[in-house]
Image 1 (spheres, rainbow, N blue to C red):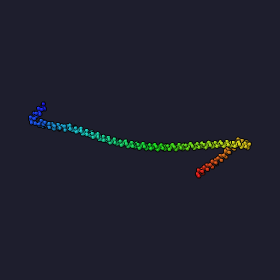
Image 2: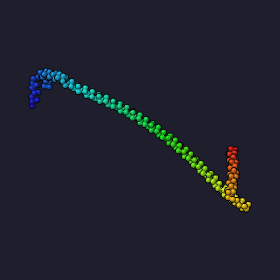
Image 3: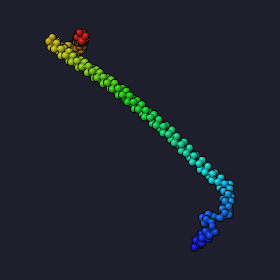
Image 4: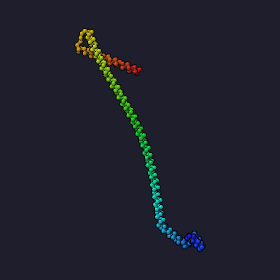
Length: 195
């Protein structure tokens, strides 16, 4: 009821119940000016300073973030360059390894062929030596048989020293005939291969 009473009292005096009294307006305006002056001297500078600090902090963080992003881009590019370089190096090493393996394969093959050729030549030499030794033994046997046969035919026995001299002389004659026959055969092979 108090509020109704005040409104009714104001209507009776002839003033508007919503508008305050003039002296209240003046005191309110003076208080507002004093309060605004005090706020502008104490609070507003601090608020502005805090806003400036916050703005500077945010701008610093944005600049730092931009620098970090640029650094990350630079590091990413360095990583990509190193990766490409490593891949090229890997390809180069693989190619060198292939070339080296091919050289080693060729060297091993050449060595194996040379070793096989040496073994074949050793085998041929051994065969020739065994063949010549067999021929020598065969000639001695033939010579001994020939002397025994000649002894029987002649009826006179030869002494052992003379038999050996005859066998050696016979072998020398056979060697001369064999080597001249081999030379003739080689000449014929050479002329036949050229023609």
